[in-house]
Image 1 (cartoon, rainbow, N blue to C red):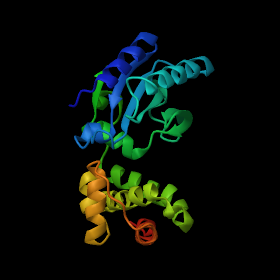
Image 2: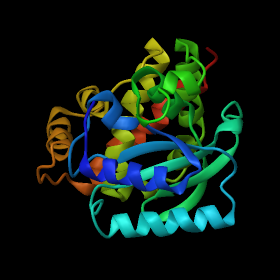
Image 3: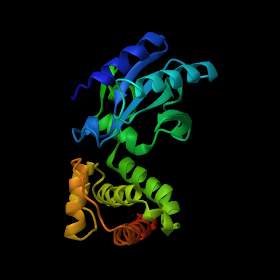
Image 4: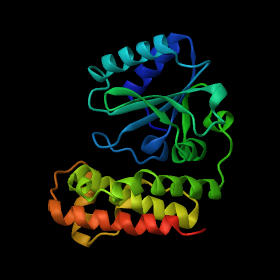
Amino acid sequence: MVGLPAVDEFAGELAALGWVSDLLVAGSLATGDHRPGVSDLDLVALTDGPADAARQAALAALHRRLDAGSAAGLHLGCVYVDTATIPDVHRRHPTWTHGQLVQRILSGITRAELVRHGYAVFGRPPGEAFPAVSDDDVRAAARAELTGYWAWAARRPWLWLDPTLADLGLTSMARGRHALRHGTLLTKTAAVEAAAAPPWLISQLAARRRGEPATSPRLRTALIAWQDALRTVRQARRPA
């Protein structure tokens, strides 16, 4: 369990609202793979009812203030889930990410991270709030992400010229393949080593994961990452 002052401050602010019952940690902070300055902070807050317009306005104001202060540069994101809607895997929830409040589902992969590796900053342990996640559930979650967003991205090769997307794609494809094969989650650091890329690119990916400056050739990296996505999406579409 890793403690960060900004997360502790955020937890205090949420608890003071009076309608957030639990703050749970997912993502790399939960799996022990968090890299300061590189990793996002992926949090899930449970509420005692829906986050209506007034609540969402309060949340947005809180996040903007923290992003300009103690959480600056930490990429702190949080999904706000009405406890009564936890069983509905298709419901969209208010989600603070990259400086804005949007509506997103709580993905199957995030649910698996919570149940298998997550912990509570306050409130119940994730395993008491969320149902158990089987290996087949992990496989299904990985298949949904690969045949959903990543299939969409693979149909748009020009997107892969963005170095950030290329890096994310290479690690996400490695994590997806691992999940389909084993029904377990792979950290991003481990996914770098398992990436379908030549050794020189894996070395550069690893350096960026450590927060070190490393520039890869844009066109070659884009082509490698895009082709990997095409292959992995095809694999995910095959009958189980």
